[in-house]
Length: 152
Image (cartoon, rainbow, N blue to C red):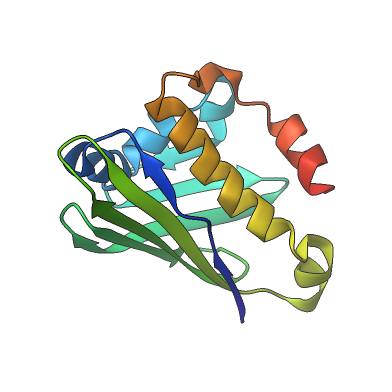
């Protein structure tokens, strides 16, 4: 099992608002650039996408309002994973935030990704922090740039 604990950041968003963004999988699709939306389907609790020929699914399994969300693999996802979203309200406008990822990766994926998963988890957190400070536009997501940063 590969376990990744992302860095903790103070996000300038109230915990209820941050929780709401993660508690409904349809929000992830809404924030994707238009050309990336076609291969993604979502409901409130589930998300399915085709990525490089693989179908990857995720389902929200647990919600504790304003503090915690647990997401697990669903459908034909080729490996088991759990993504945990932690939110700790610091005051009315700020929330301490971090992600934890546990994945049971097949040997080849583990060799390809190695410590790149840490980079991915930390990058997601950084982008959320940037968005909270008004420094991020979802249309600026460049999948190729992320791939090259992770060397995949």
